[in-house]
Length: 130
Length: 471
Image 1: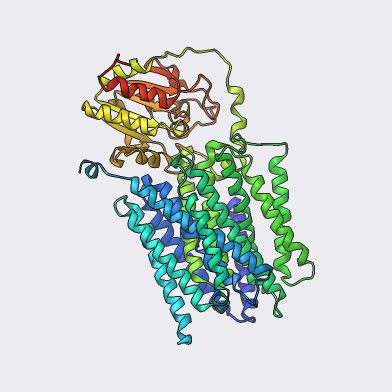
Image 2: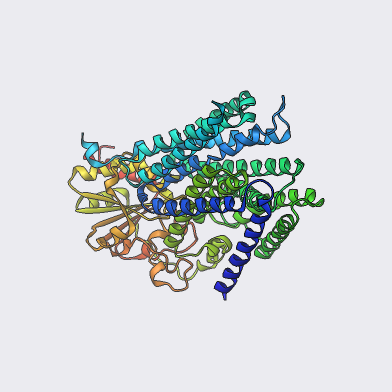
């Protein structure tokens, strides 16, 4: 029953997605392009799952702070929006973008620094003896 | 020259993606892990430079962006210097920042598109809705989680009647708004619908997290990590940016895997963690017959440990609360000096986030070779002479194996009850965090040492250091 509902939701989702993609095709980028983005997403997720499975359990806390920093890649989007239709002064939406830049940079800086700080603490016994 | 900028941007994105993957790959071993941070930093710099070069607006607004970067750095540096016991709060807080960034970018992009002559396409509307929903939900949800971890908010689950019903209705309303937005992306009514989706997402984040208790925080933090990643993916679809999609997917899958590990370690499902309101059931379990503890002093415990060959220390959240990790290190040194083997048994959900205990013990300079996972230690538990429990409770409770009615039944535990002797350090005689009585404490081989973990372990180490009786 559950599976049935799930499959139908996925099916409806997929069809409306394709429809939306076709409609989108009229306004600049093509449906094919969107599907290529989905491709990228799918492959990146598979790689992600595989790589993360290999991460040592010892390092799960530093892993979280590292992925914090990596997900602050939203700084890219923030910069694009902050400079969108730029006139001499930022409009209200540019300011939202600038706030997003602040948030992302905070995560980048603190994420990388604290990961490095934590990883420095992990020492093996051989190193200890030296 | 200028026509090469887009190519430069894409190439820099490509290299950045590869570096991010390597950065995570190198986390598989503590020896290579620090290289991973370096790779991540280079990737991030490439991404930012590549973005600015290809965006005319970004070049024009460069002073403003630089200003924002400086502010972000100024906030970020102190956030990276928090005490390691506060790392779960910091992590939750940074998920909040990540969620907010995604939400704000989605909002701004929507209004830019809505004002443009061609309007919003249906596909972009789907992506924007996903981004805004996940972003704002992660923002408030993570703030709630951080508040609970910092104990600004009560750590116990906050519940009220018809909670799941109310949450469900709100969620349906939000979904309804989103469906309407997607159905007609440029309708007049959207100027009310879009803000409603924003507000509902913000509310939903709060409502989702407040009924979750402190002990479930490892799962919640991991789940919010996944949401933060997925909101970055949605942003990538909105802005047609492959780097955002790949980096977000890496983050999302990390959060997903960590939350699966946490759920398995508690033998609970996602739905149960999110909607189960854990703390409610057990309150009644107290009472019944009052059983007797056998208690001992730190000195007694130290004398028995002196005779042991193999000592296993089981740390828990209590060790973090008491900041006892450095005293644990002193005790470890004393025992090692006497030729006693000491190992640390780490339960996946010990503490308030995945891997919390490992970091605290690493901070105290304990070599990571001696940190052993639950499965590995259980197989040799019958040879262990002394198990010393420092601020852990549920993760060693045999009720998880024997008591069918217990709320923790089925959860994998560190089988301390199989060791020859057990010492448990406890602040008071009250039951543990989840309010469940622990059978282990009433066994014949168990001795309770009451007191602050830091002081008790300090006493043990002092006792072992030789000049006993001198203090």
